[in-house]
Image (cartoon, rainbow, N blue to C red; front, side, top):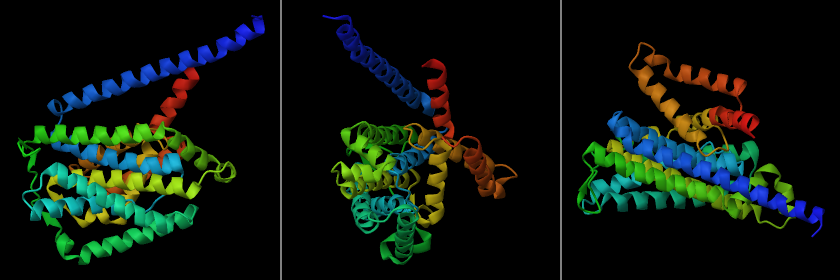
Length: 332
């Protein structure tokens, strides 16, 4: 074997070793996050943590669409509200339905609505796609106002948490927290697997250069539609879980402000990063909670807007994105 052949053989081996080390570091990091999640309710108020987890899942679902498929939706609140209303109505009207079944049906409702929205909007690009999703979401907002099963402007109150699997009571906040944490982990695992699958690689290719992806023979519209449906389903899962936590489904979740908030969370944490939306959701929810209890309570939206401007001007990759850049620069 010649020296050139030996050097060529070493290159893939070194690349594989670096990949294995990267996978090990990522898995250890995920394990540390799970451990933190398990002990968190003993260090902070469980309901507050559950709110962060619900919005983190919502932001992660939006990031799958924007960060990996390059599709900016201004109507993602429609899926959050649909999942919440369907789950709330089922658990309020049919006491025999267990919470996991109610959440599953609410998630499927988000998937169905996502398929309808996607078929109508996916052939548009850029601002036209965003405007179509916004218009469709506003249609759903006015539907929720008029529909008899939503309670109109009053919303659905007193949604029963019920018993998980028929015998584990979720009325206890600690039990409810671990249920929500498990739901979040399932949703995050779906996103993580989607992003690192061949399907996810095609989505990235479409985001970077759609004409080239078309020239390679990929059915771009089908890939974008599937990404849209997965994202909508996960947003519905977040909305269903949120309704169960707060025992309430309201028009707030369907308003276009909610779509703006999830964009803020994603951009603040880092678009196109798995952990960015989680951090962004944690920061936004924490600021809303802290400011609401301070003399600056009436200025919450102004402060969040200023934070968004600072983020866009100072670190366009978001907090996690900038940290990742710094890590790659200093340690690789």
